Image 1 (cartoon, rainbow, N blue to C red):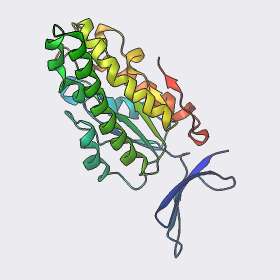
Image 2 (image 1 turned 30 degrees about the vertical axis):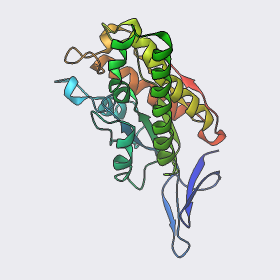
Image 3 (image 1 turned 180 degrees about the horizontal axis):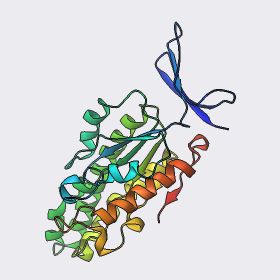
Length: 248
């Protein structure tokens, strides 16, 4: 049985209902609007993991690849912007289409880049390093939770992505640093009972990364990301509100 997303008097709810067509309905006078994700409109929020057109010259970007994997009539819209951090999502959400049915968020990599100087401090006394790492993670947790509250306030079924860490040439210390950010992402997603696409499992080959910039997804990597999103949208039961991790 399909679920419907209902907005009434400024509030959103996810319900299951039968006997209604797969289209948007409006009930005048009640301030009520509903749409059935039988015809889905997926919106991509976040950073250059989704907004990777500049890094695949001559090839399709993630959103174009996603459109090619969706069922007939389904749509995908890119609101993600290269360089975005957690605080950037508020401006992206202001452009959210009214008929959006699913949101996918990939953010955190640029937040981590802002702390890349930590790698130069590994020779400091251990106590100082751990204190700095703890402060860094707590700051990101605060920012990620605030971002996620804003996204969930939109009332759409939502999924999030981790930050991948198989970037060619990435030193092991940087992988360890990224694990602190990914711990936040997975923990907060589980707290909110959201599905997670673990890009550490999806983009695990050197060819998944762009020769233009090795920290960005290539056409090959983008195809794998699009496949993971399409699979999650079509197979995950958002109505049950349970956190599931999707990899390859």
